Image 1 (spheres, helix red, strand yellow):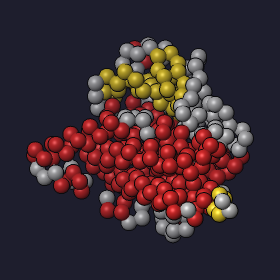
Image 2: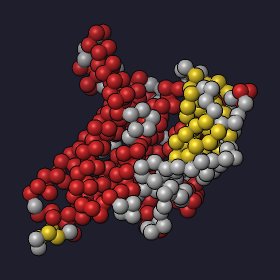
Image 3: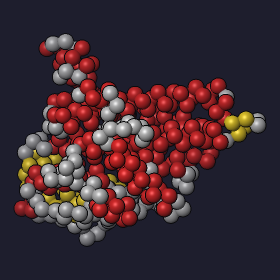
Image 4: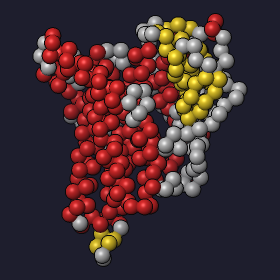
Length: 353
């Protein structure tokens, strides 16, 4: 996992590594999507069918759930961050690392080139809420927790009640309507599903925070006050430097999570530790980075029409999905206490768990 500290997949666009071409392709898809949708967004935001088609044509929608894709967690992480940075409204995480994986585990066939989404809840529930992109998905993979197992089924809801999260992404509600015999039990999958979701959301949050810092730097260079750019004022410089430092800290934690999953798999203790750390680090960084970005932008940054709002509000929403910061902090605390009782707490700090 040392590669997480020597560049990793989230390197600069100007870098020359194994991911250079893929990074440029992802950024191009994201930038085109953002530019084409200026002035056309709403609440809830609409699924970007054009961006999805570009992803499908490039073979980027099943990088981890299709063993023949030629890709893996590192490539998917790169794509997820780029799409989040440009606020592209597509359910890539839900399709690949969540729905596609779980359907395969359950032995349920789903379309190879259509978007999926996933609905989580508890066994016995009649309604699920907060489900991403139900109206755009070819199918919904139901994942109802029953202890450590999941009751899994695929459905196509007939009646959907629309909604959205803080950043305008679709978050819908529908009645399950699947008989008990329509579910498949997948043992031991509940924790891995949550870990996969948390991993994906950490990467998306990183992309959003990167955009928030980029927008803030540009705004402070271009906006003048008292005849000078905002960026020349020392207090502004300190705020920008603090934001950048916070984001680099989150980048290191997220790189560790990506490396752990790529090297050891989602079901490994290394991934469990690294994803927990990333979720805590990002959860602590989001409020301070988002607040600073909006303070630097002033009133214009709080409107739904502004590009800053798109990324900051999505970051606030994503960080609470698949376990909020407090729940992951408690998990990390239990790991530290167990290490102190059974071995050396330093093992937790350096990631030997």
